[in-house]
Image (cartoon, rainbow, N blue to C red; front, side):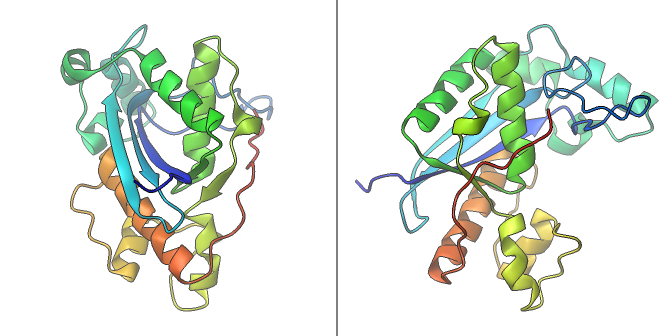
Length: 218
C-alpha cells in the first residue's frame, strides 16, 4: 500500500462562521455559542500523487445542540437552513452519528502523522476542526495543521480561464471547468472526493503550492 501524504477532508455544518461582531467589530471566536457545529466529516487519505488510499466518513450525534435550533436561527436571519442544503436532520444524526470525540481523535491522528490537510476552502474546514476541538477542551492544533486550500490554490488556472472572483470560486464551478463529476454536492465524502481530484490535477500540472498554516483571526 502507498504511504499517505495528504488527508483531503470536508465538513458539513449547521452554517457559516461569523467572523466579526457587527456591534464591536471584534473577531468572534470559532467556538463561540453563535458559531456553527459540525454535522458530518469525511476524509480521504491520498498518496504523493493525490491518489486515494483510504476513506472515512462519519456523522456527528447531536449533543447540546439540535439541527432544528440552527434551522430556526437561520430562518430568523432570512437565510436558507443548512438542513435544506445537506439534507441532514436531528433524527438521522441521532441514529447514524457518533460522539464528536471519535472524529476529533481521528483528526488528531492525522495531525500527529504530519499529513498535509487539503480542503476546498481550507480556512473554513480547518476553523471548523479548531472550533470542535476547543469545545471538547482539547488543544485546537491549528498551528500544527499544515494545509493546502484546494480553492485558493487555483489562482494559476484563473489565467487559463477558470472564473475566479477575488480568490474565490465555487466547488461546482471548478468541477465543471476541470471535468470532474460530483453528483452529490454538499455530501462530505462527495465534496472531499472532488477536492482530491483537484489536488491530483494540481500535482500533475506542477501547480501545487507548499503547505502552510492558514491563520484565522479567532
